Length: 204
Image (cartoon, rainbow, N blue to C red; front, top):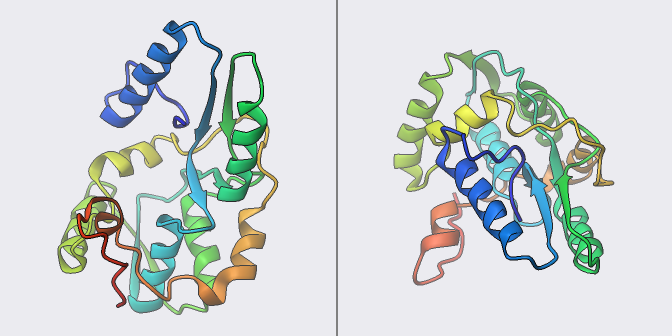
């Protein structure tokens, strides 16, 4: 499992690290399948759920810059299906794991707002300011909402792909169907991945 647009020359450590892992895998000489998702939705995803949670509670939701950078998400079930398909193959493959839709981030936030019935105002803020605001809110929530590198990756188009769709589920259809359940609970990523006690997600 990798990420869209990995590069050994990337200034972003996460994308550079994924490229190094892919290179090491190729050097082993064993057959491999590499799937490259951008973001996931469905199941216990964090990003979409927490956007919905914030839109339900904040009077203003900030979007960095013009918000015109695109997001190519894939449903978790579609990703699992790809894993099964490519895991059975004996030939090498590298596939962008992406769904059929690629809305801009602003369009994504607007779709989530509509799905949950939020009246929050969407405000565009300077790109460098957004991670600072996210950090301040993260201190209140005891979580990391958005890092500087994560924003830089999105703004640079690294969560997008021009590859053919390998997922079946349309994000907008999924939002319409699941809007009433989205964002009812905050998904604390630090608790989920790093809590030694395995605490359940905080209810806000």
